[in-house]
Image 1 (cartoon, rainbow, N blue to C red):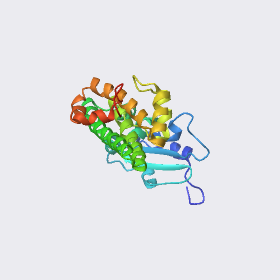
Image 2 (image 1 turned 90 degrees about the vertical axis):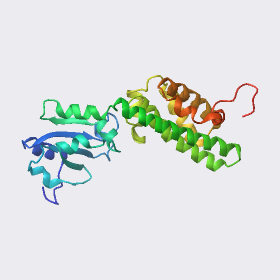
Image 3 (image 1 turned 180 degrees about the vertical axis):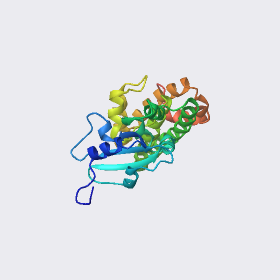
Image 4 (image 1 turned 30 degrees about the horizontal axis):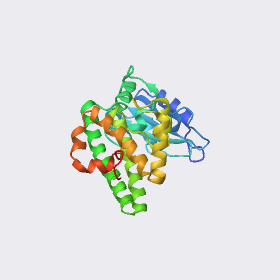
Length: 251
């Protein structure tokens, strides 16, 4: 494999499969998401080696090309990857190419796709508070005629909203690129996928206050059902600004 002949995906898989120190190969990114590849898609591959092993593929650590991005890690490092961290969703939906641990690599990947109960509850509470904060600021800024600020705060709120909804289902939030892919194939329980996608699209683009409030009403119900009422109640009277106005009241 010289500079004139860049390392190719199939060649790397063959090389790694023939090395007994390699215990797993895990493909992430577009090529692990059916229907998401384009002519620009490369192969993002983890090469997992036994702890303390010396292996041929280790010399390719950090290899990057138009076809192949390669990460060589020990088994211990792979267990910790994305736990927590930005990489978690990528690994949660990764494809196991090689598993020499009798399903052990697949179980590690599956663990990354599911937040434990305490982690999910803690993350949901944090994201709910952040969502409420951005929503509150958006509605206040709209009320006070600060329309750019209102739209920016609304866009910020969408990030926290999505993190909240996925945490309530004990899942890592997908990257924006894969949001529609994830929701179409793995809908959030209790949510209409089309409605949710339309709502986050419009709120991000326009800061539509009426829509933000209707969406908050749905979120509040889901959050209280999940035991997060205390986070909401801490907002006290300010909740009235976030909720849809009652009939006959002034928004």
